[in-house]
Every structure is written in structure tokens, then in C-alpha cells.
Length: 383
Image (cartoon, rainbow, N blue to C red; front, side):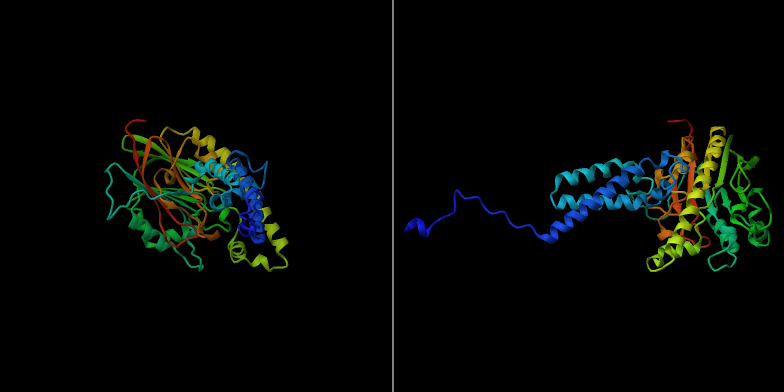
């Protein structure tokens, strides 16, 4: 009788708790997503090493690389919370392998400064800015605003891409700049019909010893400056645009393609233009890289590369040089005002002869780009 009243069930197999169907479906979806994101992340590691003419979609992966990395981190955390150690380990390995790319996009703010920071008197300031021929988004001239910005920031070296000499020469502010800077103009003096032919300008408080065209007057130019007792070569670049215009950008960012019946034609057009211009940029940078390598020891390479840090163009251009953002930037940096404000395509690179002291992207809206301002200082000896 006692055995009938008390039977703890010892000796019988305990029933396993029934697994939630919803949770099973969620795990299945997340597993598939982890595979897709993991493989995509692994492929992005090869993007900077492969010429776009060989694999046309690699530049697209460079565009979305930051988003893919964030997705990988989120998925790794999901599997850790779910205590699925094998899947968590796979995602953590993918994330760890991509750590070398993180500093190209994001750097933590390890220190806070209050008030205006002081710099050594030997430091000098470099600004690079694609001014879009001095036309703002409203179609009105922004030449006065841009030139006033230069006067306020007071950089020692200024590299302007898509420079419009006609509007600049008609502005009083430009005449005032002539009192402070020597200038090296390249290309046509009139506003071009196409931005592909827009000339460039280099302004310098230092004496310009010589200057010349590296590739074309609208693509790559250089000037040798006498900085103290040393000659510094400044190379300003404006590589082939992606040809993704404001209408394309709005079409993508507003997600109109989700309801557009003609989306296949439009998306194919965007992709074709992107592919063709990625190949052209790769050809340009291959030529420019030889010019950089043949330059004097002290070099500053800057401008609008029209490509992200995860790209063949960036790796080729930055070979043997230091990226100012990777050296002392903070937070997430973007220099192009479009595509959800996620693209850093304007750069200041320098040889090891320089120490990078500061990096800043100015939040002004006079162009479709933001200006990049960097402080550099010559090293007395190589470390």
C-alpha cells in the first residue's frame, strides 16, 4: 500500500521537456543567417586584395562591410545567450578575424578633452574637401560658405577637389585667401559640364617649389612644399565617381525599390554603373600608386577616393602610409553625406615621417562631402 501511495518514479527515464516550436523555428532561421553572415564576412577579408575587374561584386561587399560586422557581433551574442557553444564559437571566430578591419571604420573614445587642445608649434593642419564645384544641395552657390570655412579653420595646406575657378574668382573671400596662401591650380578654369572633368586646387602657406599633374588634372595632382628645411610632396586625388547620383541615393535610402515595378531595370542600371566605375578606379589607383612610390620620402596623400576602407583602391593607395583616422580618430567616421551617412571615402594619408596629432570631420553641409581636417607634425627621426 505504501508503495502505491509513494512512487518517486526512480528507474524510469525522465521525460524531456518539449521544445518550443517557435524557438526551434527562430534557431533555424538564426542558424541560416549565421552561415550567410559568416561566409560574407570571410569573403570581405579578401576584398582589398582582389582587383574589381576580376570579381565585380567585391566593391559592393566593401560598402556593406560595417553592417555585416555588426550583424556578426549580434549573432555571436545571440548564440552565447542561447548557450549554443559551437555556433557561438563559429561567430566569435569570424568576429575576431575581422578585428583588424574595425579600426578602419570605428575607434573608441579612450579619452575626453575639455576646452581647446594645444599643439606643438611645429604641427601643421591639412584640409581635404570635395566642394562639388561650390554648389549645395539646393543648387545655389556655396563658394562664400566654403571659403569662409577655410578662413575660420585656417589650415596650412588645403586640397580642394571639384574646384570651380569661375565662382571662386568672383568671390571676395577668395581674393583674401590669396593674401595668405600660395596656390597651384590644375585643369580648366571654367566650371566643367561633367564632374568627371572638375579641376583641383592646392593651397599652401608654405612655399610651393614645383607642382604637376600625376594622372590627369581632375584625377591626381601634386605639389612639392618647402616645410621648414624639408620638401614635402602633397598628392591630391579625386578618383572616378561611383556614378550613383542623388536620385539613385534617394531611390535606395527611401526604399522605393520595394514597391517599384520597374525596380529590376533601375537596380541593374545602378549595379552596372557601380561595377564599371569600380574597375576604372582600380586602373587609376594602380597608376597613382607608382607615382606615390616614386615620390620623395615625406608624403601626404589625400582626397576623395570614392571607395571605402575595405576596398582594393584604399589598400593600394594606403600601402606604406598611415591613415589619419586609424591613427587618432574616434567614434564612427563618415565623410559622404548620403547612403545613410555610413561611407568614409575622403582620406588623409601620410608617410612614417609624420606623426598624426588629430583627426576631425567637420559637420558642415556646403557639399555632398564633409571636409576632413588633420594635424600632422614632422618626426625628427623614424621610430
